[in-house]
Image (tube, rainbow, N blue to C red; front, side):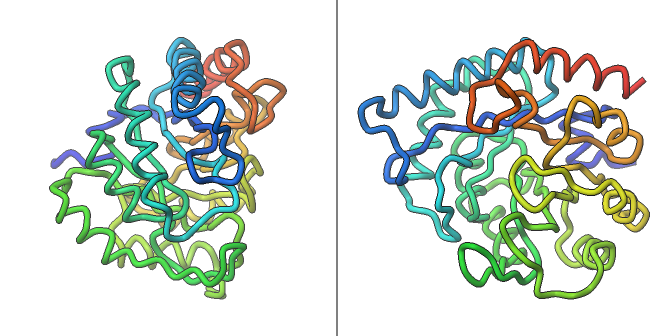
Length: 270
């Protein structure tokens, strides 16, 4: 049987993909000009070291701090993320992905420049969002992936967009089944309403029932107390806030919290 992109990256493990939330990038309203790009690199390096020491299965670099978010990001954002990841690339011992909020083509471009194994994006649907009308184009993104020479790049499609309301009133499982057929994702992600908020497990179960062989990951809000329940249903998770000091999204990674989360994840995977 042909190995899928997901299997090529993670094998048969239910992966814990840990977020490296970059500090606000140049041009973003919250950017710290005094600390500059070197400050962003230093903070990201500390989080990367702590997460790899905890034993996470993969990393994902994201610009969650670049609020307010954009649907077409400034070129400077993508360039800055590429610079930071390039500075850290030799220190990575696990696979990594990227997410440029909320611009799929920018994420693909960044993955092509840095060698990322996967991207996370909203690729399908029609939303009313905090950023305005949101109509992603999976076909354009997939063709762009080939254009930049990365047909091997895995695409993780988040079907329950954060900071947004789906205008498509089909149920989440119906949208998931349609997205799998039409956009050929390498994994489907289920999210809560905003960063750090849990996705209802009932929704994850419903999506899993219609996903066939496509992996389903929980994208937000997985906590120490819930990782076992999540892994009883889902094929992996993406986690950020729970690994931070005091469980706060905007704080640095807490090495002890990260290590304990991975202990619980390993127990759940048994």
